[in-house]
Image 1 (tube, rainbow, N blue to C red):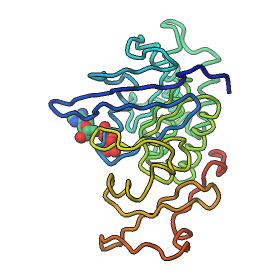
Image 2 (image 1 turned 120 degrees about the horizontal axis):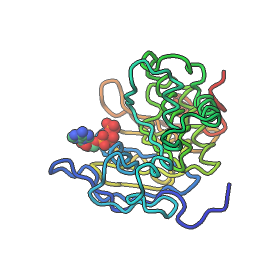
Image 3 (image 1 turned 30 degrees about the vertical axis):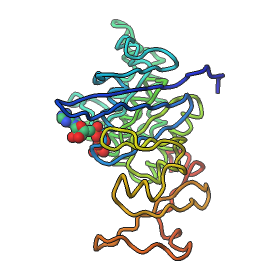
Length: 296
Ligand SMILES: Nc1ncnc2c1ncn2[C@@H]1O[C@H](COP(=O)(O)OP(=O)(O)OP(=O)(O)O)[C@@H](O)[C@H]1O
């Protein structure tokens, strides 16, 4: 990794945004240092997608101080911002009939001149991005005929093709089978290790704890906790924010938090485990060091 200057990465402060009279993002401060993976957690409607949109510039914050590597994002021209920040959204509209590799090629637009068209370098980056995101096998298929998980991989490839400094992802594991989830988060981890800043909204607390350096928990548009996963993801916090009972175990190989929910089928909280055996019954996930990529 290259030497970092102070303030490298994303620094967002006092980010606020109202829809009508309702403040849906309420004075949020968030930092994602260069080379770090940050996970944005919180219940439905907490404001995660809205915050990602505000950072990406899809919507304009009412109030915000946003810098990327010390540069003011708010005053940056749209094209420059698109060169430096990529957003993987949950639902992407693409023109009907477009091939998957052409959708990925859209990620090159901020780097191209108006009359230049695709260069061999653009095509090489598209192919490399599709391979990294596990989407190479769909390259010639129509995007609108792909499954949800296949489209999700193409969306990630498109963002990688943008060659951003900051990668924002809204539930990037949505629709993905477990192998693809682990491959995606492993890929994000490796990209961050190479210097990318990553901020992903996630619902799976154990996956977030396995791959993120830092988690930020939102509720009602505000940050309720932030810090290393092991410090933040406590049973008390999970009960307060999500209203569910959980046991926080240790991943047997990584030592990172592993969340086992303690809700019984009748809707009542289960009794806490009496020994460590419940840990084995919890869904054990591979942390960094698990599957290396999409190839079987
Ligand atoms: N287009 C919209 N018009 C009006 N309200 C909206 C719109 N989009 C989002 N909201 C509201 O803003 C709040 C924050 O929504 P947001 O999508 O950011 O939450 P989220 O944390 O991403 O939720 P989820 O986990 O369900 O994706 C919610 O109360 C939501 O209903």
